[in-house]
Image 1 (cartoon, rainbow, N blue to C red):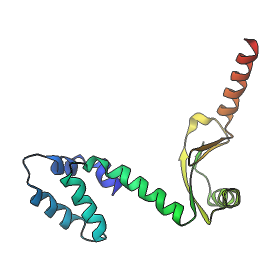
Image 2 (image 1 turned 135 degrees about the vertical axis):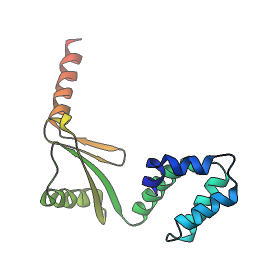
Image 3 (image 1 turned 30 degrees about the vertical axis):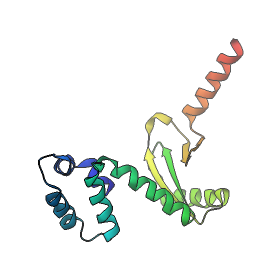
Image 4 (image 1 turned 90 degrees about the vertical axis):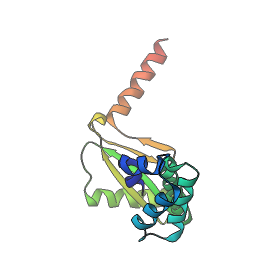
Length: 148
């Protein structure tokens, strides 16, 4: 859902166009998303009716957060210089599963060459920065604060 509404300007333009009737918009949603749960389809129709179709990504993100919380899943974004191997991901999952007392950890690996080396991990609002660039920035800040 999130990909459809964040990447496809055509569908958003159609659903927000003032000259297209609500019946046509509802028909498009009903036919396009008939494979989905009826509650999802009805929510989309309601968002169109209330002219809030641009909020789909936020609704999906919030639903995923609630689902993860209810099922004991921690979502982690891991920034690394290269793609992590499956063994490395499994080690990280095991470590964070214990640390956060969760049933499982869903890892999203993002390749970011700017961190130079090491890892930067974001779980919820907490960031664990073990990257070389992060360490260099902390040393720089410490030197600047001591010289003042």
